[in-house]
Length: 534
Image (cartoon, rainbow, N blue to C red):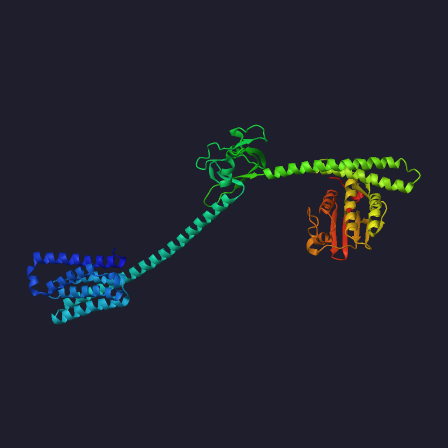
């Protein structure tokens, strides 16, 4: 199959040959005697023969210097044709001139036009042309030169425009490939999500579904209006939800859904708890407003909540049994120690601790069933007495561990709040201080009034907390590396509970600690005369 260059050579040469043939036919009819001179026939034959050569020559195997010979030979053949013609055939030079101007450099154009000018000059000299003929030659020469220059400029502009178009096309293709690749990546991410997602138009048309949603509901992606293999229920083992009230149907009607729970009985016979929500995506440059329909499988979360509630129930039951025995025997012992006041005091401390433990177990059960639902019991609390009682409770523990426990408590510290909760705060902080302080260490509690607030500081000379861990102390289940390395047991919940209770009392807590030197816990609670319940 011929290349682009070969086809252009054929087209240019065949066009000239066709014109030459027409001229030859006209001459045969009107002036057959013209062939007697010989030069016309030789020139015409040369042009036709050159055309035959161009049709069979393998142009794809040669370079441009060989190709440029063809228009030069055409110029020569036309010069021979018009030598003794007796009438103007100069216009035929326009064909090779246009060819040179279209495809070759300015030097080839100058050489070709120069050759035409030399042929005209030689013809004028040999035929002793008059002034009128000379003017005609000059006009033809200038016209051909202008035609060559105009063709060259136009061809250059055309080539530049083609190059620009090619570059723009290449950029557009790169952009198109980029957009296509980005769409493929978005589609892959869309299908890789572990939550079910559907895109809906503002009119409720389903634009796309990801594979998770299709698999979850057992849908046919080619016809999503067909019922899937899964059925939605209002609760596990409850009543099937009618088609008109199903979340997807409601979302297609334009209803807003936010964490709506439904139960799905899937095609494999398993129950799944789902959380369904919708999110509006604003209109973009090339698309209207769309709606995201999101389906989260929360079965594992529901099961873990149930397991936590069951565990709390079992633990609470099992803890209450020995606790009831402790409380009962303590009360019996108190009846028999009237003559031993010190022993009676110890027994009252044990009884009070058992009572608080029972309350904590009740709260654990309540929390496991969905959080602290009961309102706190607010009253005027003598914080001074609360601190004294807590110190009294932990004094034996500190003594047993060889920890010196001292206090400096200002009298008359009265706050509004929940006495049980506040005692929980003090106990947790004191317990930590004693637990993480070694033998021959010390723990000191200081409480005083500062700017209409009760400031409580508990300092110890214990192992301390690393600076990197200090910001995580209040996170649930977090234990500092120093605490873990010490081998002392703990859950990592105490300080989080302390902060939660203080925040509920409009209080605050701060920590300062140095590894190997100890920790300072600073708590602040508004006093009654500055406290306003909101």
